[in-house]
Figure 1 (cartoon, helix red, strand yellow):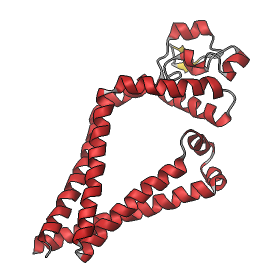
Figure 2 (cartoon, helix red, strand yellow):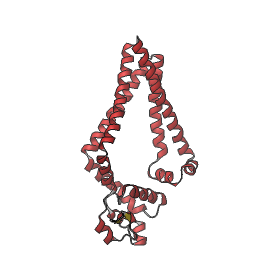
Figure 3 (cartoon, helix red, strand yellow):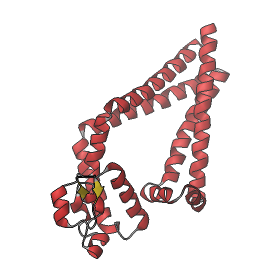
Figure 4 (tube, helix red, strand yellow):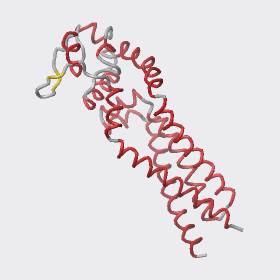
Length: 241
């Protein structure tokens, strides 16, 4: 009985935290979607770039809604000893767990397919918008500077882009000074061919593989928490009258 009461209390506290995180994400997501200019003023130009690249508001609303529902079901089910709520909590968490495993398998097995698919989407966008849309250009400049990479595949992604047509040059991140690893301007085609700076997709994969222990540890920790929550919810479900 003491074990049951302890697990019930821990289940309530754990899911209360999830519930509050969901409420916070929902609030921020709704704020970004409704009053984007205020969000941009508060967090600066980088947030504008991120919002242009990915619709942050809708993503936060979706993530917040899932956490809100999950936390509510777990907290309510444990506190009121409602078997239906506990079972729904278990199944939602199980679906999330299975989706995460499926995503990991796809990422490992179909990396080349994913690269080809993203190339078809991203490269045309670079050739159309890089140098003409300020936010899009800022996103790519920040990405290339941070990852020390050039384009999605390489410098050829920028051929025919508004920036390339206007200046007859490539982004400075595509030409690197081997002495101090700084960007070179102007970055001509000859320099870009000589330096052969790798694309951001390959650089991102390299960084992930380099930090595989950290990434795997975080993934294992999240998976362990999910398994523990499912086990506790099922224990409470089976021991409720």
